[in-house]
Image (cartoon, rainbow, N blue to C red; front, side, top):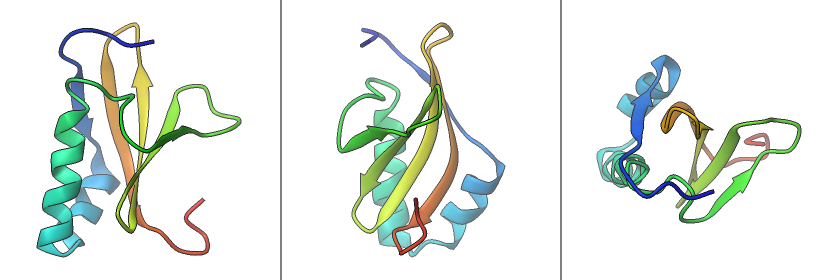
Length: 89
């Protein structure tokens, strides 16, 4: 499951917009976690979302990063970032 190399990471539209609205300190932490996906997108407090093929969730403090992992191209696409609440999942 682990690829020993560099993964390409892309923050897509809505996730990029949300990241701009998050308080600077939290946004910096989230961005650091997203950068860490380049070496290992399977590390940290992650969970594969049920009913989905390539979709994962990672907890970062009160926020959740939702992303897709494509092992055949070694690509990670961050598509949503959300503050944890009653309807985060």
